[in-house]
Amino acid sequence: MDFELKTLDLAAAASEKCDALVLLVTDGFQGGKDALSRLAADALKARDLEAKPGKLLQAWRPTGIAAGRLLLAGAGDGSGKRIHAAVQAAVSALRTSGVRRLLICLPEAAEDDAVRAAVAATAEASYVYVTTKSKPEGRELQRVVLAVADAPARREAFAAAKAAALGIEFARELANLPPNHATPTRLGEEAKKLAKLGGFQCEVLGPKEVTRLGMGALLGVAQGSQEPLRFIVLKYQGAAAADAPVVLVGKGITFDSGGISIKPAAEMDEMKFDMGGAASVLGTFRALAELRPRLNVVGLIPSCENMPGGRAFKPGDVLQSLSGQTIEVLNTDAEGRLILCDALTYAERFKPRAVVDVATLTGACVIALGGVRTGLFATDDGLAQALQSAGDAALDPCWRLPLDDEYGEGLKSNFADMANVAGRPGGAITAAKFLQRFTAKYPWAHLDIAGTAWKGGAAKGSTGRPVGLLVQYLLSQQAAGSAAAKAVRRKAVRAA
Image 1: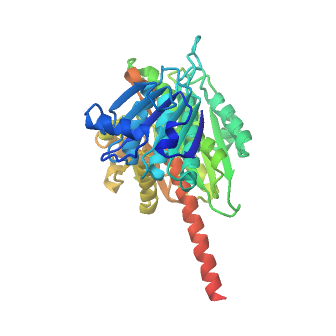
Image 2: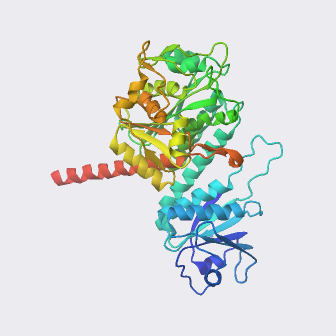
Image 3: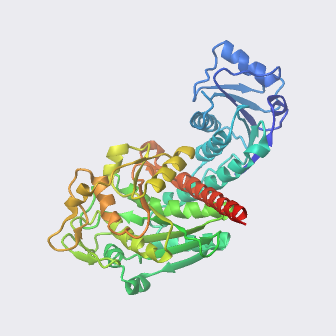
């Protein structure tokens, strides 16, 4: 889909040729004397339209307006969250109408948050999965113009929003693929394609290389499947080589049967989404290919299937991780933390400024936070605040949960340095406490996306979260780095 940002007032928008025009109407709407303003004002006065987000009023071939269709969409107070809801409702209503060219008029006071929200909502509502359908219905919407009061002032936010939308769509498409398509080998191939597109470095390790490294936890999980494991390393260099990178680690379980501790059959098909963390890291690198920020980023993706084959690891086994620490396996369905712990140890070699792992890790996090907010755990307050702020700005919110030492008591084992599970209480926290044991050498955060990475039921499919959060976080780190560099230069000038 092609997005464009234009400076248009409502009078100019009324003359713009397009298949459909969406006018976002906020509380206290005050338009001019143009046709669009008069129509919106009359609809509000007649109470045929409410400014409440989600409320729509459609018109066909309205007089004085060039668009074939007009949608007046309530946008509440005009905040990013309300704009997102309004645009999502409007684009969803137009989805089967044959609209190819769409004009969306943002409120006159719209700022960066509104632009980000409009792009994200349009991309989200118009996405259609077709890859494995024999008679696919393709996406009809091809060109979307956002009309704002001052396009140059919104240009930077618009560029970031477009890149994030590309990354989110990439992640959704990859996670939506069936597990016989999205194998660990396929993830490695997609990473290589991304590297070629973005000029990244990419290394894809197989079982032999991982064995030589000593990643016993990853090897243990993978051994029950006929699909060979992959360990993917992506490197984006946008700053000086000496600058410490941000490392993103994504859980890449391409299908999770639970292993010997097998899951119930109902909804097991959704375990193809267990590589949502890997998909989000790859989606973030897709956005980096567009944005080219001035910072260094490393992506690490341990990927395999968790299957109950004759060679599968089993409860009672003890695995030796890359860190040298040993792990007693009490439940083979707690496999994500096992493949992540080796990747977190591998991250040490990059001497990172921060490490953020992303994983569909625990059902307990779904119970705690539902599908609204991602669970956030962190050993560094600054990193936690940066991620929380990024999530809020991207409308991809997270919520910080505790890491008190007492939560780690349940991981004690009589036969290894630790067990891979504790009891049921605080399950999302004890999983994070397990991972924390492999992160002592850098600031670390863990995003548990088990509740937010996909939807079930009639809306079944990947959400692409938390790509929006990660992209916004990386851009904030670029801005922070630029501000710090300027401060150093000013200090040097004063000293001279």
